[in-house]
Length: 119
Image (cartoon, rainbow, N blue to C red; front, side):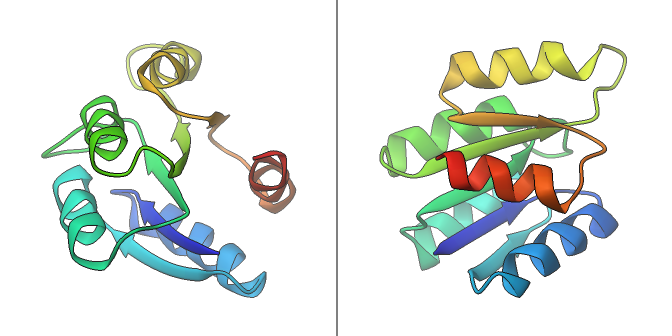
């Protein structure tokens, strides 16, 4: 599966990419929503996008909205560790905006792969 990972935290982005690559997925990455949308336009379509909710430049809500406009059939998994609010608040909003699944940080390999399998 061709997957785009959008995450501003390099450690988390690398972890997600390593997990997905080890499962045989073709993975591209972006450090924020603006770069993610550029990747989607340049290298898409992607079958799945894993996106953080709280990022500089362009947050996850805007990113999800734009992905839905550009590629409505792409599956989206939103991830968040929260911020000033609990992660559930951001993840509930992500689902309202069109995400297909959500995962609260921190998460492990099994949780990520289960979310992908369920989609």
